[in-house]
Length: 100
Image (cartoon, rainbow, N blue to C red; front, side, top):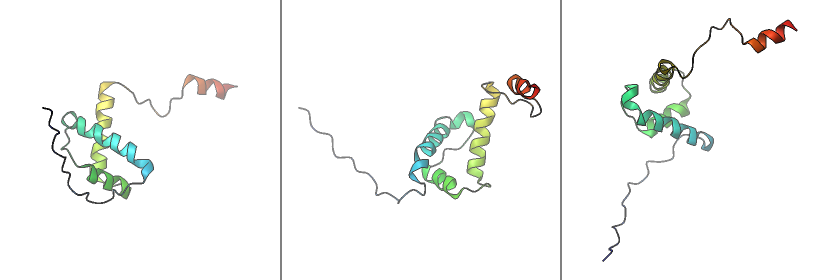
């Protein structure tokens, strides 16, 4: 009949992740996006533990974070989803407020 599947054997956890609880969901979302689109981003897949450690260190010189964000931004800009306006140009609303 319907035999129950064997119990799932999981490895022991390596330890607590170095992220505060409020950063866990956004970090998982960003890591999952980078992992899912690693081919399009031309990134080698990396473990969430490594990503969490880089985020927790808040190091401005983290190569892992710098390359991940740079490559994601490049894809977004190349797709035309968003554009970067010149810093010297304001919106029409801002110009109208200044005239008043």
